[in-house]
Length: 379
Image (cartoon, rainbow, N blue to C red):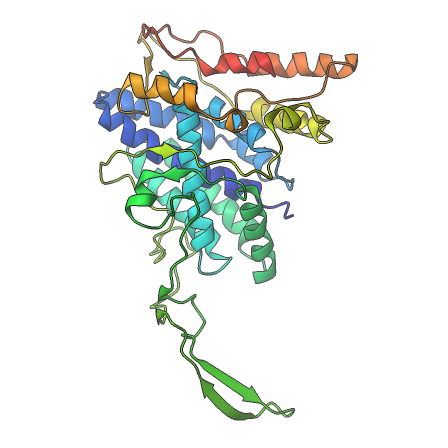
């Protein structure tokens, strides 16, 4: 497991979250000024300097539920609110999109190009906000400093760590199904055509060498694909052509996006087994959340402007049905931390829960969709 994976995971998932929210804000005809404020508030929180400093410290990845808590906090850093079903769908879309991108990276190093594509698109959301552009550029420079000198082997370890994180996620997404890049069982289809990784040759030729390093024989074979040489390498500079399209906004064309749960594997532990088994990383996850949440600066909304609820489904009825039909093993509502028998740990938990609280949030008139931050009380 690589201890340098978390920044790439967080930034790429955050980029996907912004893509989805931007699309839904437009689909629900939210006024432009409100939509910009939502995105600006989330980006401001996401790229906060102190938060980035904590994020880039070498550390192992933690559970999906722990990271889900961070994104729940991030999604509610503005006047917008999502209820449980919409937040579940948002996180499903984020994770499956990034899983697809990591799987299809031609080279392990190209995970960095995927990240740069997300940052380039995020800068497009905030073109009229120089302070926010500066924060994103600072993060870009930190990425270059942290990952610019890594070897191919270190990038392979990062990619493998990411794939391990996404390993058991097989949620069907309508966009992927329609584009025929995902099967009905939720698994992705790897292409057998297109450009090969930069710096490599099109398959089809085997060279044989003697003990002096001299080529003595060539054998051609049929590879069964339709590969071409990569035209050029993507730019790893602040500005430039990334060449790779993975990580760009697939929601720029307005089309509905649905998610469907695949049948759970019989080999998976039951939800009861998963939630009651002792968790040796509980304390570490608690500390992880404390550090990250403590660095997230949520700005208090100014003025009397009411909040609003964003629905990631086409109708409220669909949202209600999704909440009822979601498998229990895919619920992220509670982060299970065994802290009931240790008084000192209880005090630590109470302190952290206090840090999670957001005060003076604007009241909003929607009758459905309780504020998801209430889930923090169940930690």
